[in-house]
Length: 101
Image (cartoon, rainbow, N blue to C red; front, top):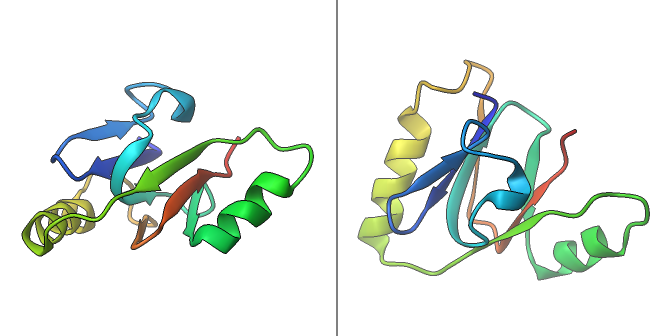
């Protein structure tokens, strides 16, 4: 498994489920991946990303949720062993963008 997205309703979507374009677009709380496959940022960063020429764009959006739901999702993401030891947890993003191949 190369990456996994964690949603506010407790569901996940990974590269084993499909391509980044097929992942649900809203409710992302965290993305776990090997380095450099996903990134996250704020609205200004989103505009910058979308304005760059020559890249296939794939954006997934975060959502406000309760502290309890957020903590539960982050616990799952941080402890997930399906991703290799070099995994990185992207969290607290307004949006998450695909930057891999």
